[in-house]
Length: 323
Image (cartoon, rainbow, N blue to C red; front, side, top):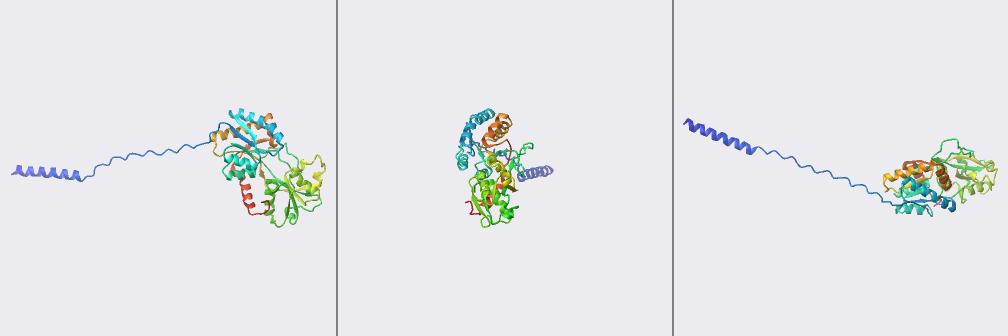
């Protein structure tokens, strides 16, 4: 009898162990890790020959004579073929950069902002020049600067001594597309409570020198020009600084840019920035960039440096004048 009871207990214990084993969930195998997807490599524009384009802001013969030496210096610095050409105008250059037919463009500040906001340009350097004082003297014993200012000029007996005095006056400018001739001056007036459309009369003289002559000849009460445009007339008008006098400045305006297409390889962008800085640091190179655009050198720049111009252009969109 004891053997039977012992056997039953053994069987009962074995059945309990099996049942417990069936009720215990099996240990889960670790899930296979899904490999992280790799970021696709950025695609940059493939450039065999670097296309560089100048703006015809000076005599075409001067630009044509200097583009060859500039091209040779860039080829030496970049160790790649370079082709330097002259654009018809800013609009054509911006369109060429948008279509990536041109990779590097010399753009004035307002034109750079228009190009950058269309995704056509990214600034790499800004030109440097000697500053001038309020009497128009070049400060060649001072460090080079990356900006300049527009100036308000008037006749010596006009009675205009401040911006507010321009209300009701006729103002001569180089053109309505000029950054220093109209964009910054008009915003200066607006910031001083003058309605740029109703309170003043604008006279498009067709050039900075001609705007000054309009004041000298009594065709306008005042003029806005780059500082100091009176130097353009000193040879023919030795007393120009006594007859047409300085009143005040605008805010600083960043100098001309050298910009590249945004899709360019960052390594090449860096090489181009260094190339222009290095070229202008040599005597031979400085002579070339002086002859092309009166640049003295180049310094690094960022898009944020041009936010004031961007703000002024947006304000100008609300004006009918100059459209």
